Length: 629
View (cartoon, one colour):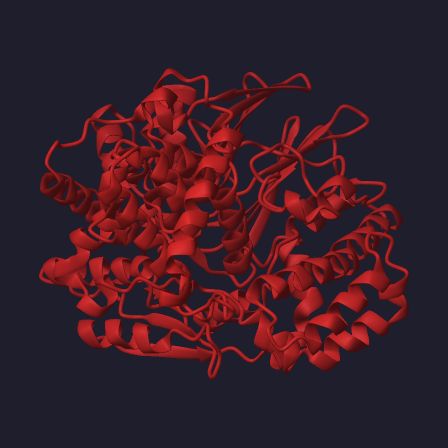
């Protein structure tokens, strides 16, 4: 897990190091830049597998014909190395990087279809003087690129490493100024900075003579599988896949931990880890895995520590509670935004503080529960689509609406919600109306909707497919990459093992919403391993900032000062007067909701981003022009 940089063309070694070192937070364990004929490759290392110097990158293979700079992990590298050895390949390291190189030599670009992992990598072929680029199936690892005026080509893990190559750092105002774009641009080539492109997930690319050709190697719809007919057998199959996904993600030469919220997904992950570790304790007695880190928001509606504590006590492992105090880190907010680089609806503070606590405790790898909500229907706004599948069954309709109501009900999500018996009938009628409006708007359209398998998906799975591949999940994967890697911590996601994802979209909607519960198949698979209070928990809070409490409380004066500053008033990307008025109205409103707070923070974020990314980026670009590179 690292930060990568590359340049095809002519660049000085000094300038390449300057670019690469802008990624030092992603790779705090060292870095290197090498120049080969026609190519410069840079790497910042976060050492996870094979901690020796032999595993340093950029790494060469096959008599130094192929050179790689690689960000990610190949979890099935042990199995691949075994197969490659049987084919005559030899290895000098215990790293997954060398296995990846040998796989490329053996199978060419088809090698990526054999990989179970997350990656963004580049391989330079010295003989044919061409560059191969690849990004993992779902875009867990980032990859940006740009074509320079002189015909040269550059790529990197983050946009900031490309700033020294640019004359000006210009915001893409179409994205930055429109809150509706926040969940839509990540799955496109378009970026928040002009002249920089995002390499697409699930694609390979070849660069030859300045021409980049990109081709898609992965589509989940091409990889749907047959599922057992009986629900009980479906549950067993899911459990087998999920546990194996956790097992191979536990491969690490450093201690591993978990960011535990107390929700179903992260609790399932740590419980699977505990079961696997204890099952193989006789063969691997020294694996260090008992590290649960829990973000705490005392006296706010978003505090879930009581649920997380139930899980750790059930498993008999220690818990580390991290009390998130925004005032202690507010002076770092602009630095955090520079590391984050993007626009989002909530503050990066709690996430970065949590992963910073992990890093300081010596935990560099965490297995987290991301991806389950999108693949298995964890969001209450998705349940409407199941109504389209329920058709004319009163029983199914009533059950779906009850699941949606129970998820929507908690006061932490909407304190204005009236008592249940006052408006239940009216609420049901309203939801049914929204369902029909949703159907006629065709909001579940996808870039893959012409694929023959699209028609096989029910309405709920179509909605989830878009969330997983095009809107919500790509945005969250990007966010968590920046949150964790800004602190030198790697996140692994067993729910996003491609085998689990393919299985999820092969299941019918009735395996996901069942018996009054969403994510039913996960609950039933994990029931033997978790406290029943967690299995049967219906409210959804999620790991988020208690934004209402923060804006009205500890951050109030900070934000009022900022919105009165000259920098804020003259920021070209915002309407400062309107935002200040909205903030003042919010502070006066005793019924302000979480959604109201998100809108305020989204508006403020544009200013924070402009100051942190655009202005600092321009200073970096100017420094690169003025330095004797």
